[in-house]
Image 1 (tube, rainbow, N blue to C red):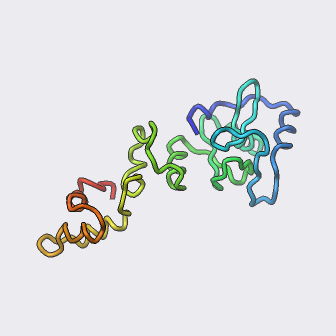
Image 2 (image 1 turned 45 degrees about the horizontal axis):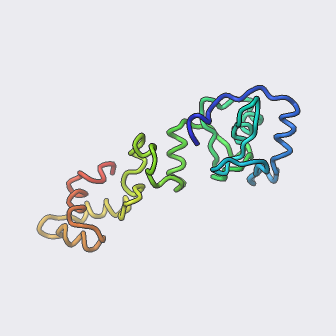
Image 3 (image 1 turned 60 degrees about the horizontal axis):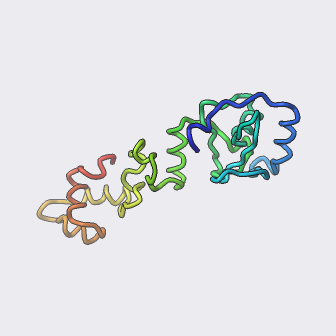
Length: 177
């Protein structure tokens, strides 16, 4: 979701509120309540209000809390884009939204501007080209003993190059751990 999606919501008429609720398939309080109306290209529900499209999970948050979430994002704890259950929604900054997406495995590839803006989100095991996990890197550092356990031995065991092992033990790679 782009930062531009964090625009303020307009005033709602009673008719718009009724129309909104008519397109939400409500279930038990712990279940997702999917939007049955039109989704955007990412699967998030959207509706027109005051001549502009708005994401319906933002509308759901506003109608449930009375708080316009702008300028924050509205995130899903359920990770289900069409969900409008207020119990599954919470606000966060752009960076928290990105970190949530990375944590949930929805943004591993820095194939857009995001990777240039937030390179820390794609460091280490979050890198799409990573062959190692954070735990393996820590194990490599713990086990490397010059002249006893060589970089070549560790490289063969972990399926990487000796140069990669050198970068890990010298802390020029995987600096974040």
